[in-house]
Image (cartoon, rainbow, N blue to C red):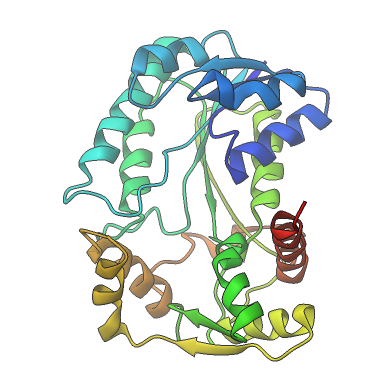
Length: 293
């Protein structure tokens, strides 16, 4: 039995589906029973648990061969990452008390970096879970290709996408969430000892210019790339309701200036899903969602 957090999201869902496709028993961890209905229909055991509640997590992790754990995304954290610290403490307590056979932790490219940025939450997570008395692997994927889903509508209607990744011709490490789920499932089904790190990116690196060009091919009209000056980022993020945009800005700086990178590029695992495959699927999915009944 493998327990999987985040099944209603892209990576957790991909992990659970991959495990099920290989005949594994899966315990889907959800925040409410209503969110687990689909997974119950797929043959999963469903457990309701939340990172706010260490006791519920302990029950969800107990009596399993392995668990896939993650932090919920916090894009506008409080100063000092108060929310993440609480969640990390609960995860650590639950894992220690439940004692699963092994743990695969969703982390991120650049988790080894001490410099404060939005990804520091995963740096803190790794630091805490490094001391677990359980075989533990940190899975560090690159920038998700699916982040471009926000660009679909402006690409369709305005023929333009806005990029915070700059300059436009700088290659960025990216990966499809389906490849992350595939790798997580493979790791869960593998026996190992001690502590390890697996870093993961797609078959090649893509520039923001290539993202625009890929949209152009798929939508069959020109899509231009607009790079937003860094001086405008804070005011824009605050206009969107963010109270503490500094960590997000620092993260973008890290990608743009190269200090957010894999710790060991010579050992990075390569996925097989291309950017074009991901964008094509996202565009098709969006078209189906917007089609009138």
